[in-house]
Length: 447
Ligand SMILES: Nc1nc2c(ncn2[C@@H]2O[C@H](COP(=O)(O)OP(=O)(O)OP(=O)(O)O)[C@@H](O)[C@H]2O)c(=O)[nH]1
Ligand SMILES: [Mg+2]
Image (cartoon, rainbow, N blue to C red; front, side, top):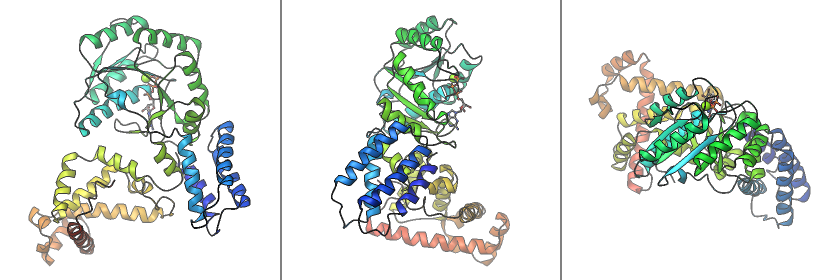
């Protein structure tokens, strides 16, 4: 969703390149462009004005460091300002790991409440595992009697995430909430996610019902789920929920859709509430912690390596990663390892998705054609390695002419592809050996 802003800023900054220092005039022009970019991105007008005003004061009031590239200097200033507008500190996920915690989830109909609960449960389990902490004992329940099958949907998601689910006997919202809290306490769960009904618009009935649930449950954390696609309308929704019930923080869903950054901005700035997570797809693992710093970096077109790594850490099977790291540390790198690397890349998403996160690449205008070529080459490489015997994978020098013919036939590619693969592979082997000598580089642990 931030592609739009990224593009906009890239062109703004390129105007500054070549200038020896920032002058009031060129800042004024550039500020105007930033202003335009933010308005077009659906950031509320008042937020944009406040942002530009503060930025102007900082830029104009400051002695310009002529030693720095003015573009770089300006990027840094805008970046810092974006970060402070986005809340400055990363979304806190501690409420998922407190000793005992009840979490009430609310939001408009279709905003993604139920899906997000499944994702949060999954996130809590995965994160506890990664941090080597005891897994929270999670219970999911719903008081959504508004939409038929809403409760079944949560049950399915809880099963998928491998956490418990409880269905209240009563169909009265308040009584059901009481029952659920009672069940939660009785069975020594540590984390309760309570799903609530949504409506298409804010209405008094919805808010009154939420107030009652809130009274009964007295949640430790209340989350507001916001659909990024609803744009500025989301801010009014958030304000209404805040006044009526109050909440701890927000979760912005559907940032994978064709939408703009405005809501994230407005939410943090106008409501002074933190965004805790962002949802980037329908699947269970498509939830990421919200990081203002990374978001700002991404918006400025510098890529987002940290997010990519976090995604990688969640998705790549721990074991595979450890084995691979071990063999890399030993300076041994076989075609088997190469195949694993290709699989890891694939598990991150498409090539173009992965490239987006790499600094310098996102704005570099790599042609879709080149990306597609890379993708199909990786597929061919994978097929080639699959067609080899284990012995050949461990020692590619065994691959003489007739073996190559056999492998090529098995993979459905010309022999030339095998030669290219071996070429690439040998380059990587050299690299791994070098790394072993310097002892510095761990490719899956860049921090
Ligand atoms: N692309 C995308 N789709 C999402 C995301 N989160 C939820 N969805 C989809 O949005 C739709 C609505 O999600 P739900 O979780 O049912 O929303 P809800 O707020 O519980 O809806 P109600 O219970 O009807 O109020 C579903 O089709 C989800 O798969 C996301 O981050 N990205
Ligand atoms: Mg729902």
